[in-house]
Amino acid sequence: MASSYLLPHAQHAPHAHPTASSQPRQHHWSPYTENGGVILGIAGKDYVIIAGDTRSSEGYNINTRTARKIFQLGSGIILGVVGMSADGEELARKVARKIDDYKRNHDKHITVSAAAVMLSRTLYQKRFFPYYCQPLLGGLDENGVGAIYTYDYVGSFEREQSRAFGSAAALITPFLDNQINLKNQFVPGSNGEEPRTPGDMPRDLVEKIVKDAFSSAVERQIEVGDGLQMVTVTRAPPRAEEEEATVEDDDEWTGSTISETLSPLKQD
Amino acid sequence: MNQHPHGWGRPRDDVYGAYDSSYLNSTQPVTHTQRPIVTGTSVLGVKFQDGVIIAADNIASYGSLARYDNVERLLQVGTHTVVGAGGDMSDMQYLHLLLDNLLIKEQYPADDHHLHAPQVHSYISRVLYQRRNKFDPLWNSILTAGADPNTSEPFLSYVDLRGTTFSAPALATGFGAHLAVPILRRHVPDEAAVKDLTREDAEKLVDECMKVLWYRDARSGVTYSWSVITKEGVETGSKKIENQSWKFAEMIKGYGAQNI
Image (cartoon, rainbow over all chains, first blue to last red; front, top):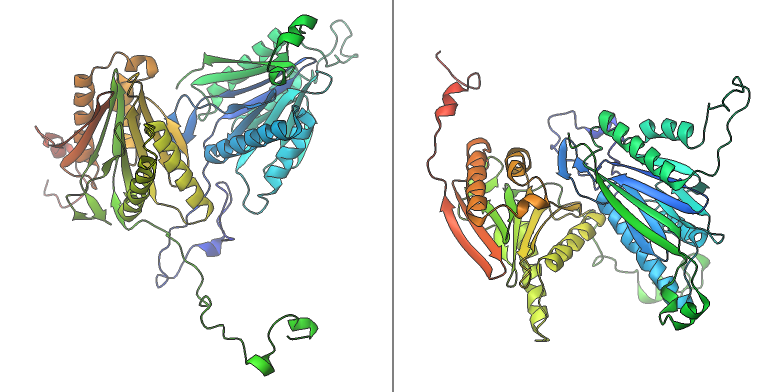
């Protein structure tokens, strides 16, 4: 395997360019590309939201305005990926397949925490030719509480409350720090003494914050825009006893409901 | 058998003679395609209300030399799909071989199951992504166009040498992505607009874009092949760019010998 491929943002070493005219001119082919876009995940007490824009670009070209970055993997688990879309889609396909295999082998749905470890291993298996994408894994944990797992390219991961990845992550992260984790916010009337405690946020409020985060990012990042894909996992309504008995393919019941909305963002 | 720890399990040299490794791989490292050689330029594709149009010119260039002027870059695959390729022409021809073999294999069961554009696009994109993973890419950007034989739902998708895929109502590879896509998007900005674009308008639109490319892309040709795919099947033809006007060239100054 070639060892000299470069990530899109990596600096070319000075010696990589043939300086003497006697050396043949060589195109340096990189297997990597960067398709832009941004994703954002927020975990609540009984829900998870992963949202992403639908623009896919390469350099200054907009490839399409309708590319989805959030994938439903089955068993109530969703995955958002930004970076190189070919690698991202391959990763989503692979993990969806593994989640399906798990279901068939063990006759039960994989938990988010187990899927999180599995995704980490899947990324690490390509440690020396990494997937060039940053994944956000979302779902409801064993207690029905929202969980977001965040990764780097080679599989380091942790569970978090909120995270933005992609080309506007630097714009959205401080906004999330302030609006979701309530950093630098104080209880009104406490004269800046008592910090507000982050915690349970109603879903409709969080959805508004997500939309604001994206419409602001669109204004300042050229790679972000066109449309907003928002995928939400919530607890499925509990089923009545007799209904539980009559449902034939009971295995399909995951305990969570996934809903997806598409809304417009600015196209310029 | 050699019992020494360093060569355990191997034939002993003093009994069998030194191991003849001459037939193994030479010391040369394996080399892969680092750049395209004979290349085709843009491919255009537009969806319209009951199908898709795809077009590509017939030039294959060797650097800046127009080396071949009668190259067919559109390939009909099955009954309702056309694949158009830009980039390296030998890699395109290899891909045509793969697609021919794929179709032959699909014929054997005679089970009335046919591959349509989404399946063909999927197949090509897997081949291209696998080859980039082997650091031995097929140096092409490819449009797959098709229509569903039952619903006439148009299909148009792109894939390139890194396995990047995407779909849109109008697509173009190469220089076309810069010169033709903005014109095409004016007419079909989204899927909803596709419903209002007639075949006649779509054909005119493609003619216009091919003319712009002929004017501005130095690797393009004056004749081009086109295919229209509807639920009835594939119609294919060849065209020459008509009503050319090079008046605009008078405005261009500063790129060569000029007396003014």
